[in-house]
Length: 206
Image 1 (cartoon, helix red, strand yellow):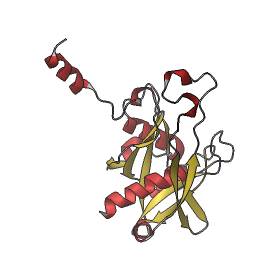
Image 2 (cartoon, helix red, strand yellow):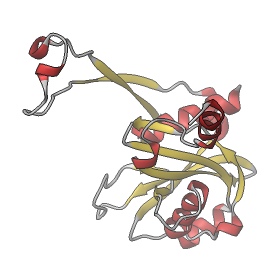
Image 3 (cartoon, rainbow, N blue to C red):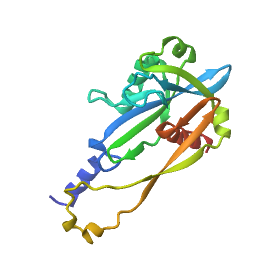
């Protein structure tokens, strides 16, 4: 194999980051809706019967299935399943940078306009306990607050310390993550949803 072949192989590489192909991949839609002639961002509250994160505030979305044609296809499919909005009724405006929670978990966010009246009539109450909206104007003028969560690394008992410099005395680098919080009326938006929301607001504010 020569350098021309290496160039060809490098050009074929479509992964955004190392490990993307084997990561747990999800996609979400940030729904923009018009309420009383004003733009709002719509959120869901997950049903209390959901297996993961019951009661959390989130955007419509979920896991990218093997049969999904693309992350956008998955985001629109999940939006249809959760909010009852057909993919052809979503005006997709674009995508945001992927949120890489870890090398094994990535979320692809998209932004689209949907009809609020359709959602109110049709959302899936088995998965969604409630929907609510936050004025985009409020979000643009609001500064969320942040708390840090410190992460500790704990190698498995069979970790090959004899293969690395300093062995069991190796100094693992301390890590922390930022958790952002938006407080609107009696709703708290935090976690992955707040991080994606903050990125979206930053993009359109710029």
